[in-house]
Length: 120
Image 1: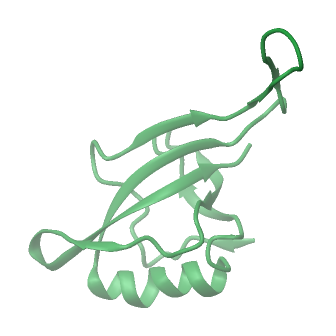
Image 2 (image 1 turned 180 degrees about the vertical axis):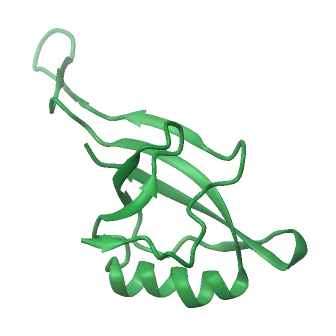
Image 3 (image 1 turned 90 degrees about the horizontal axis):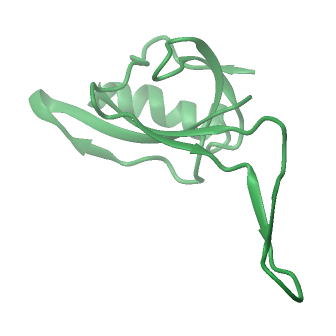
């Protein structure tokens, strides 16, 4: 399993973490009567959006190759990050097939918002 690069700070910016919750219910329309909701699994992944601030070199030389080559454009899971709220080590996956875009931040830094899925 892939490991988050040690050269990338794995702590998101303060107040940037947004919990998206678990999507563990499927809704099925019936022929008659109300739609049926049911739980799909006993454990479901948790979703988070979090913004990280890196140097341009960290973004281009460390993150982009990690995302593209090591994670197969986000298809594979990895370890080495801590849960954004509890701080516990987790196995995670980045959601999406295109690399998250870096946005210019203060002091020549790059702010990158990642959609993270914490696996059960």
